[in-house]
Image (cartoon, rainbow, N blue to C red; front, top):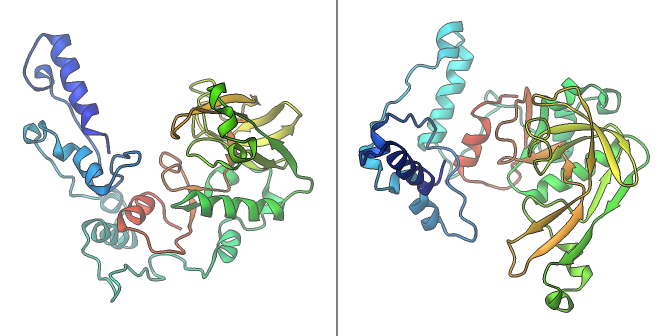
Length: 317
């Protein structure tokens, strides 16, 4: 969901461009989305801050005319009873109408998805016979294991990496503090240990043939944040890959090390590293926009229903 300030800024921009003080400069603007899904992300904010940032908290909301889509066209056109039941269950989850247990948790059933006991069972259910299928781009890019937190994602990626291929190539980042006067306060060992959102890890371990995801825009529209590639070359200062998704699909490209600066801390921190990470598994938020035919879901801990609803709205395995 967009932050309310983004829509309010659009409103003021259209008013200026059209010299018209009416809402959106007198234009009809279509806003399409699902309020059951992701709330605006407020760094270091509380739940109240997220609600306050929602479009429904904007002064423009009372100017919005709401229309609801009521017919599931996939079910309507193909008369698919199973798809209809699946869609109904999704709506119940999203609206909070699905029956919960004594701990107020939603319990999924086997007619809704395939259930496994742990991520060791989840991996082969998504990536069957992975060793022999490592060079099939279509098969690699149409499946992934999804988890809410990076901690789980990193563990799954590490476990899968140890099971495929042979020799691991390791790349270590160069980490520095931008303000040299603060450098003595933050030893290199501390900088190396930092795991930040959208920043590659200090220690990047790869093997030939593994799928990776870009974390930065390098050459739009071919190489953008979220583009998935298969590693084809592991050099000392460059990594070669074949694009598996997007407009550059099938192209061979080279990924260099780049400096990445983070401002999420109380000091400015810069990491020189390849802007990629393994993508056997990825976070649920990072998976938005990906097209998957097979999606495994790691929900070893209870999570809010909006995460589940957002995750399975487009995928079924």
